[in-house]
Image 1 (cartoon, rainbow, N blue to C red):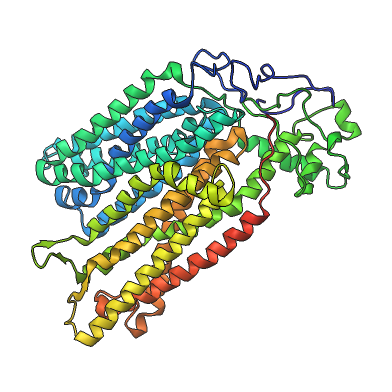
Image 2: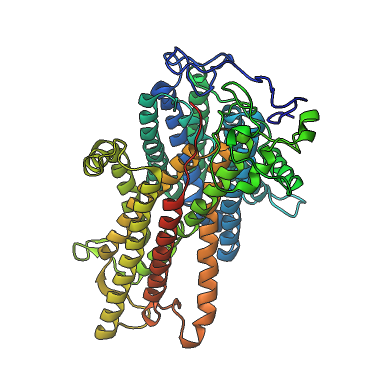
Length: 576
């Protein structure tokens, strides 16, 4: 089985794959290959000339996704006539599927297809889904058919679920494939790779900004056929640009089933419950030479801790006669499992972090109970439009991080790279706490004004909506640091043959954060119902401030937990 030890004799295991890497030679040292399957040239492949099309494709894909997601509720209710409850349920289901399918896409990429093929297939599926959505917008809604569901509803439902399936292969693989274009065994290229993560997030939010402003305006004023047709065209452009640059890309070979390798380690370890692990790690089973037994993966050095799993790599007399992969694994296989176990607590802290953005609907409700007039009564600012401040903050801060913030931090810390990925996540979490504390403070002040002024039932308090700007800006700063930090962490610290899968795990935490906020709102509404509720229909009679303070406290506890995880975290030790 690919990715497993299949030779009969140990420890004299042969070199399975490839040739030794040339750290200072004309080829990359991380095992990447070019489009023809030959060792990738450092000069003619990868780096920024390969990333331009990747970033452009990500911009097009993000624009298409947010063009659908941002205004989907209007399409379902106004065009298809769905009720608010039905539309909200359908949107929640679709968004959940978008994140859940990332596990499937990442598994296929790491195990069998490779990241490039997975992206191409997923982009095609996504684009076909966008075509179906566009058709649903131009099909006459009053077509009479004997079917229980109208062609318009059928096309839109199928289109939405095809886009969700396509996103499952795009989201975890695009940032990982982009990072693959930089050889981490080369110090100069590794420094450039750290810049890529910021520009990737810039491209994502650039697509969101265009979609939430220009495309939404087209949908509302020029029709949904054009409103879905334009992002569909952008999706096609993204595919064409991505395929046109194939000769510049560096490709990592898929390493076989990661799930199988993990199961082999667990089974082998339990089979040797009564075997003593040697104190000298050099006696543990490992492939000779520089290559590991896993295709596309460097060797991982043995680390202390989680010694139970070292039993899987302990050589016994019976292993000398028969080397079954379910009885004996290499150190690299064992370390893969150890790495995942160490990364999991860090990933779990992302659940709480992602509740900050999940609170945006409550931010909008808060703004709806405030004075939204600017410059007297000349202009009324829609409460939802303040999310633009978060987007603009990201678009400014993401590129500025490399040119301004990182040099400043480097001078203060004396560390060349400025902040590690864990430091970066921690800084973002601090701003998430500040965002919720700012929202709570604004609501507390608003309720004081309501009580003093005697604001009528359901009326807006005479407090400017612009007081909400800091909380939106703080969320933007938090995302630039932590979201990019999690992307970088998922790539840098994951096993070479599991990078897309770890990226998918990071994305799943976004969904879990949304689910957590939803569950908390349900529980809190039920518990506080007897006193009028913290979050009633009339916010002037509620205590939304208490919910925001609760969330701020939860984020503070999460920050402390993250610091504990980060200080005890053992970084991956890979051969170069």
